[in-house]
Image (tube, rainbow, N blue to C red):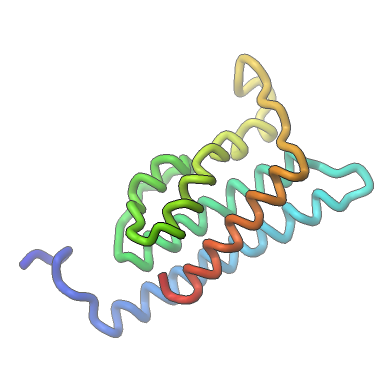
Length: 144
């Protein structure tokens, strides 16, 4: 039996939980900043989008940690989603719904990063993404 196939011990699970919780705490901060950016006198959709991409990335990584899966250093949600391969349809649906926001991590932070600028998301798209990420955080917190 390889190391990857051996069942996780209680201490291994506790270590994973603690590490995942650290990622989730930072993700919560990113969501808070994103939502605050939408409530400014002049809402900042690009800043909100950036922080939501960051939050989604951290939640995906927390889910991978909880599953005992290694991940490479990346900001690509599509790559992380492929690594997740969630068996729970509720998790998979939310992960799939967030794949497209990878571009939010660069589109509004680096001028000239793309030939044609990415349109900023609407406040409705930001709220939908925040809810989806929040749902995944609850699932991860409850022990994905």
